[in-house]
Amino acid sequence: MFTSKLTLAAVSFLSAVASVNAHGYVQEVVNAGTTYPGYNPNTDPYYNPPPQRIVRKIPGNGPVTDLSLIDVQCNGYTEGGTPGSAPAPTYATVAAGSQIALNWTTWPDTHMGPMITYMARAPSDITAWSPGTDAVWFKVHEIGKDANGLWAATDILTANDSIYTFTVPANLKAGQYLIRHEIIALHAAYTYPGAQVYPSCIQIEVTGSGTALPTSFVSFPGAYTATTPGIVFDAYQNTGAYPIPGPSVWTG
Ligand SMILES: *[C@@H]1O[C@H](CO)[C@@H](O)[C@H](O)[C@H]1NC(C)=O
Ligand SMILES: *[C@@H]1O[C@H](CO)[C@@H](O)[C@H](O)[C@H]1NC(C)=O
Ligand SMILES: [Cu+2]
Image (cartoon, rainbow, N blue to C red; front, side):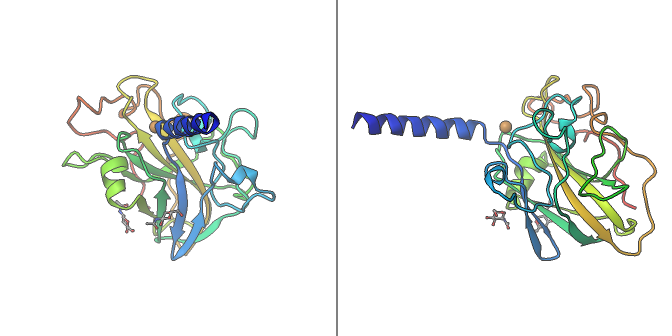
C-alpha cells in the first residue's frame, strides 16, 4: 500500500516534469502523398539497427538558446556524438515546386514565435555532408505574426492541426539539399539569451528542370545574434509588427 502510493507520487511527479519540459520537434514529413517519419529522440536511439530517417538526429525536444553554437544549425550535438548536424542515412526525392508538409508534435500555446525554413545545396552526397559554419543557407519561407496579431507557431500551427507547409521553389536547380526548418519561441525573448530555437534538418533530392540558384547565403551559427532584429523581442509588451530574423525569402 505504502509502496504503491510512493509509485503513484513518483509517476505524477514525472509526468508534471515531462509537461513542463514538453516543447517539440517535427514528427513527420509529407510530400506528394508519401509520409516520412521524423527522427524520434525518445525511441530512435534504442533501436538496433537504427530506423532509416531523412531527418537528422536531435538530442531531445528542447531548444537551443546560445546562438553561437553549432547546435543552432540542426539541433545537433556538440558533445558526445558528431558535432552538430550529423547526416541521416537517407533522403526524400521531391519535385521542385511541390509542397512539403511538416507535422510538429503538439506545440505549447505559451511558445509564440515565427516558423522559418532555409535550404542549402549539398556539394556532395547529402548523407555524408555537414555544412559546418559555411555560409550555404538561403531562406525559402517564413511566417511570423499576422496583421491580426496571430503567431505562426501557436495560433496558426495549432489551428492547422500542427501542420506547417512550404513550397520548394519551382525553378530551383535539381540536386541534393538540406532543409533547415525552425520555430523560434519568443516567450522569454525580452532579453538575450532568451529566444528558443527549435531547428530540424531534413535531407532531400530535388528533381526538375529548373536552373535557378540563389546568390547570397547565411551561415548557422552566424545568421542570428543578440542584435539581429526579432531575436530580442518582448512578445507581451510589443503589440506591433514582428521583424522575422534572417535574410529575405528567395523564391527562385
Ligand atoms: C501527425 O503525426 C502524428 C504522429 O504520427 C499523427 O498521429 C497525426 O495524425 C499527424 N497529423 C496529421 C494532421 O496528419
Ligand atoms: C495547413 O495544412 C494544409 C494541409 O493540411 C496546408 O495545405 C496549408 O498550407 C497549411 N497552412 C499553413 C499555414 O501551413
Ligand atoms: Cu518550452
